[in-house]
Image 1 (cartoon, rainbow, N blue to C red):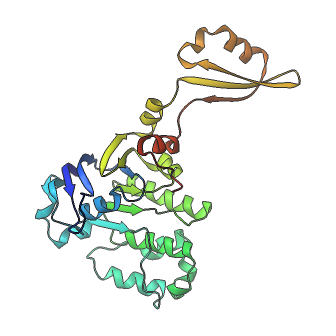
Image 2 (image 1 turned 90 degrees about the horizontal axis):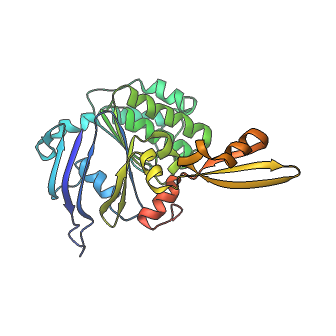
Length: 284
């Protein structure tokens, strides 16, 4: 879907470049996570890929053609959900949706989508009266309304309760299953774990690491397994080498003779990898 080769970008008033020679691809039909702490260039990269920013150095191909060669028809294929929802607060949700529908040739059944995200009953309420979570859900509907081929989603579940976050993630997965492509930016590593086929970690305007979540966990994790078990009235914990488990008599004895409480591989979490690769906590 996208091929990015040696992309560089510097804002006119900045001394230092924001994007420093990054190269990666977004495959057709995948959910690609672009991750990193604030200020490393994620939003700038998204703005370039959605043609909001030009005057970059390097090459960007969209569906095999130079991105700069596309006219406004490009936006018919693109859906964008910004991190900070932008709505007309004095208009109702329905009026907001209808306004943006008129900008595109193709539309989806937004009433059905409003029902799925739990906003249909409040569609005639002014958006200024909406809670933060309701605005986030309406923002998601707006990103989907033109039936896009590729979705750019920035923190799509931030501010949502677990129930509504689950619905949004289900819709994103269905979008992918129907052939859609997604670029996801978020600080919620659980969302990344659940949704992303591949992820790229950015640090200081560069790609620091790129791979599937599973491969990254295996790369950065220890090949150990911790076993917690009950021994009489005591609870004990032992660690074993993962590669020699099948021939480890002590491990086999515990499995056969003890009441096992927990077994965990020493797989690194994406939060751990985020901090290790970027040097910044996900809570910052």
